[in-house]
Image (tube, rainbow, N blue to C red; front, side):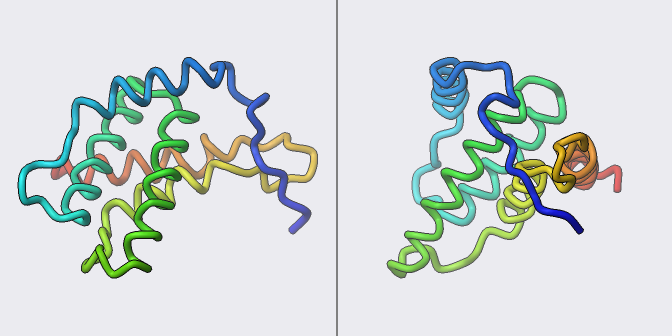
Length: 132
């Protein structure tokens, strides 16, 4: 396999300010429930994120950014002993978005989002909705 090339901000058509606005507005609609642990919240949030992406309500770049930021936060909580259970669904959704983050072909002619992320998210959503 040749060298991997990360998908760069130039590979998407949304300015950073617009991505941030969309993410903040969307995330405000899914606050943690009272007494909900971190893993349960992240699994619930991941299901919502996967469904929104699959339905075309959220662009890849925003979903990937949200998943990556939350994964980093989870890593810190885990290392600090705050998170007691690793959120399996969240990890699966994170990995699906992360798979689209870099090109496998050195010339960047492949489409990692269409090849890896889209089918993985579709399978997750189908399973969540009882179709698989």
